[in-house]
Amino acid sequence: MKSQFEPYNEVFGCNLNPEKGNMQLNGTLFRFPLRTEEQARAPSEISDKVYNRKEMVELIEIFVKACGNLLLFTQNVNEIEFYHLPATKTDPREAVLLYSAHRALKHTIEKPFGKSIYTGNEITVLRDMAESLRVAKRNRHHDLMTISKSILQEILINADNNLKGLDITGYSSKSTWLVTWASGVERSKMMALNSRKKGVLPLGSVACLLEKQDEDTYSTSSLQKSPFGFYQTSHLFCYLPLPVESKFPVHINGSFAVSSDRRRLSCKTTDDKDAFDSEWNEALISDAICRAYITFLEHLPNLNIDPNEHYFKQWPVEDMEQGIFARLKESFYRTISDALKQPVVFRRGDKSVCLNRSKFLDPVLMEAEFAEKAFQMCIEHFENEEITMIRLPKILGTVSRIMGAIVHLRNEF
Image (cartoon, rainbow, N blue to C red; front, side, top):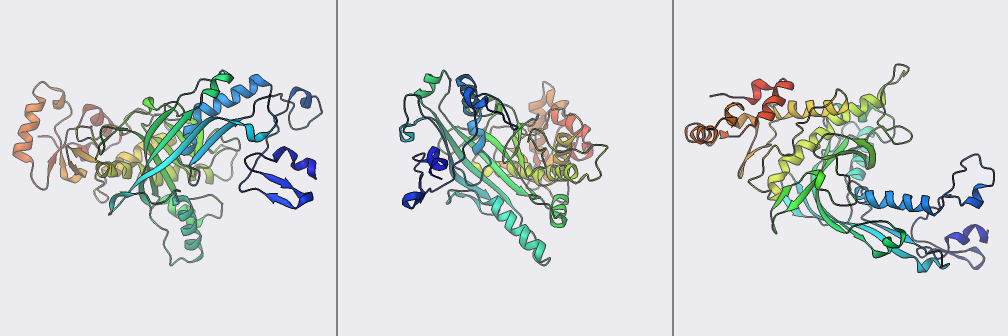
């Protein structure tokens, strides 16, 4: 019994000595069976892969390059530290810190309360939604809770000089992210209430990189400017990152149904009798995640966003192949043109309005030399307390045609 616990003793304060009655560990330790060359010689039905120094350095390097992503959508984990015990040492207490990532939750934005200081040290939306779903399934008189919340968070990455001893390049950084959470209120909600599958939660979120202009003003930033430790292209997350890229300007997270190796989303094949997983992913992305995307845009003014920033900077404008991403893009433009929902996503300066209270010049005219004069004349003659003139760039005019919303998005003069 003692030999079984020996590898764990003194690792991060672990003290397991059954003979003396000591069984102390405040946490959980996992020991991964990474075999040395000598250990790999023994027959194994699981794996005969050898982890030599080269393999271990590559493994650490992969972790270091993506460590920041792990904290974007996690609920209770706010800090990750990576230690290394040199070959010349035997006492685990002499392990040296190589790399760390720390998340600080700064502010929350909710309707109708606006911006406030974040008082907790963990994010509870996943737990709250799971509990609400459990209650709603047991008692149909209890409706499923509705979530619309943005959290401003800072992630600090510290790359220690000890990394250089392993020939690994790492960089320290401090980045600010706005992560917006929303629950499904349509198809994903009904599927979750009627499903017996575990993990079917109508909850989605998006994450946008921010750049601080001054003490109280921010601007949204391209993911290409993400610091070391983060993806520089949009990825899908199922709370932890998935190796699935997208053309959206933000990261996308949700309770997706994924393949057993977590390398792709579940999709229906011609041999499948049950298409629930693929239908669930489509419902989730076009409902909960679409709501999170729209809510993110609606919350930006509460963040004191730079008034000179284009309101469409973080909109999905890239062409996308048919599939789940096209579903999200289509749902996005259908929602902003919905006369009943009326999301407030159009901005000019410090004014924020919905589509019904907006007027636009033809995007082609906005490309002309006299565009600015024409736009100012429209402000003088057509703008009032009910209507605001909004610049509609040519690229959004093209998008509106694709989505069949041209009648809603263009009011020509």
